[in-house]
Image (tube, rainbow, N blue to C red; front, side, top):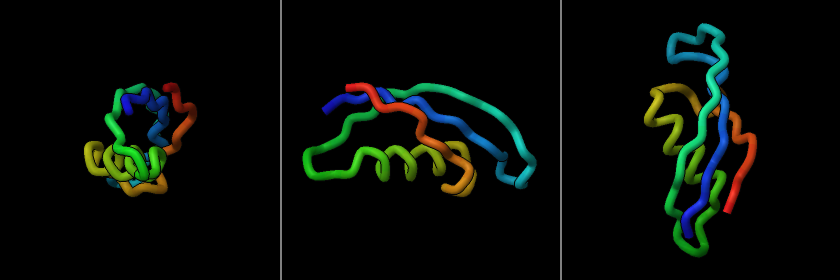
Length: 60
């Protein structure tokens, strides 16, 4: 399933507050949690802790 995730990044990897918003398409397999998959991938890509990523909206 292809979904579009709208997200916010609230801090950089040094812990300094920031406000960045974006959207990205993800391909998620059946049985996987969309939010967990997106949260892990975004945190890894931006090299920030998972607590710095906020999922705002999910579109199918």
